[in-house]
Image 1: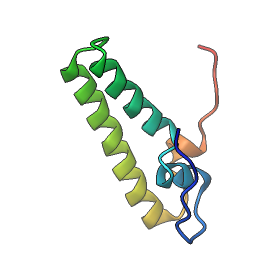
Image 2: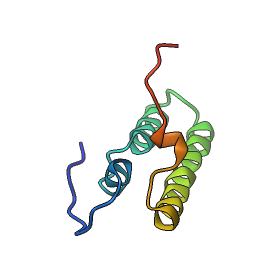
Image 3: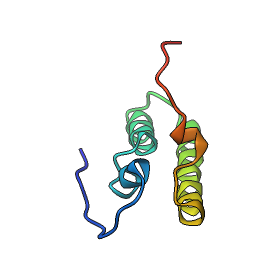
Length: 82
């Protein structure tokens, strides 16, 4: 598991998770790395999903630097049982 990494500044809650590599995006990346390593999913499928979430992490960083808040996708997210 990952822990807190001090970066010396205050930011949004989700950005702190991004910086500490504890976000849901990082968990998905790590899960697919392990699934591919154990041949549960094909490596090419894992690579596609991992790339998708690495892009989300990059875009999140750009958005937070420009706007000072988390993207709406994060800000308005709510748990649902669907």
